[in-house]
Amino acid sequence: MSEALRKLLREGNLPQQPVITPHVGVLTLHFQLYGCEDLKAKRKVFTALKAVWGKEPDLAVAETADHDALDCATWTIAALGTSSRQISQRLDLVEKAIEEKVDAAVLDVQREIL
Image 1 (cartoon, rainbow, N blue to C red):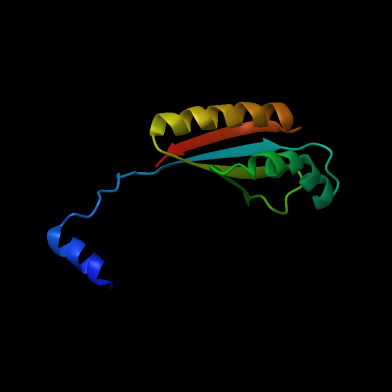
Image 2 (cartoon, rainbow, N blue to C red):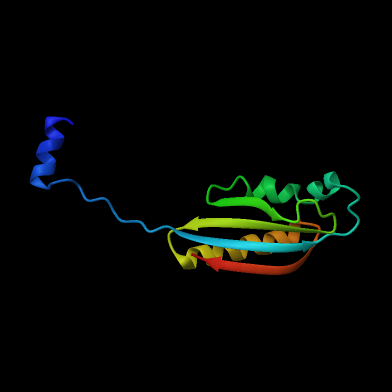
């Protein structure tokens, strides 16, 4: 530790960093698929989901269940933000866009703000 840092610690004059409490939102979508003959066809249906929202800096996207099923899929999107309101708005936009872009019926939507 440098002498300058020791001096700052003794004097208590360290600059105060703002306290940021991150909030996390989790959106889980259950899809019904029709006409998928193999897993390759199933993956193709969800290409846009990973390609578009998987590259967003505040989102994480993953298939979380029904990996081997050809007639259904479960995907989860996690969002990180500075407020619960911001995350709710972001997840609303993502959910609406997914319903428009993904060619699969949405059976169930679960949302949780942590």
